[in-house]
Length: 173
Length: 180
Image (tube, rainbow over all chains, first blue to last red; front, side):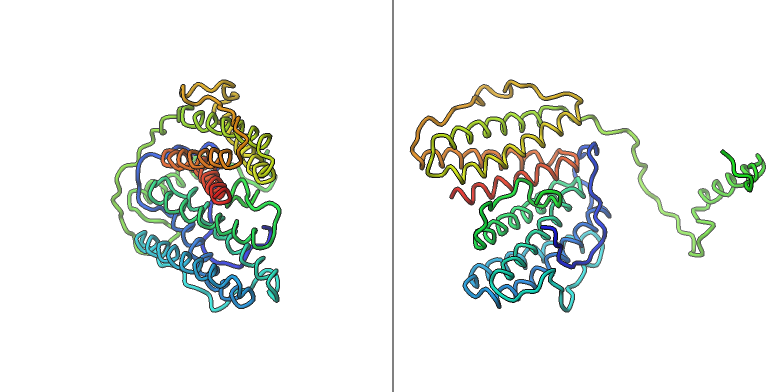
């Protein structure tokens, strides 16, 4: 997706090839906090946006309800991790601007795909922001969930190709 | 090259700047800051670089992916019912293989070995059965194996590799989903 949903949070550093391997567990660092804030902001945006998706795609209300529950869960996890790291979690915005107007089922599906793509990008960045294996595992779980939701929405949109080789990689997803 | 407007640094000026730095370090304060000085005691940081990662993990992932690419290519040829779906998955796995081999070449400066030598059980077993359900079951098993291996590899990987492995693990999870 080229259109990124408006979101806030700290700048996330992309690790460079050749970074040192992980050396055991360590506290959450500044890089991870910034990446978690971005992921949390993406989750806030996703939760707000699914209300819009549900309004236009009433056939998908059950799927949307399941996805909202999943996003609420990972939002809370992200907020707790940020608090544990000694920072204040970013809050939700009163409203968000969608990259394209949502006026029918097709555009609602497009928005759903965009927000999941944003969440996937953000959680992949969390993986690359830390050497701590538990946090990497949490981020991988969130990335995988977002990737699977993207498949659901691509199927619903009738896309010929429903999987991507590198979910969460802005270069390829 | 020196600008005509620049004056050369004298040794006295240089020593003066160095002196400020030393005093600042001793006092724990920044001469350009108006905030009160605070002295923080921290554990000494090690400057020893971490040991270089052995190629074993990455090589194992490459061998596994090669095997799965072979199995998928065979499946595409024998399972006409699911050929379109399997071709989509094959394209993803080929992209994974290219990325992993590229990462190996970048890290170790050489192409990975051509032969699978990681495990005697990792030999290509072409899917000879044309029964679509059997074919799909085998490919789903490969996707499950790949998801486990890439998830396991995440913990000891560099940050860059962790992102790559994470994306691949998430991708093969979606393969399991579409094969279910």
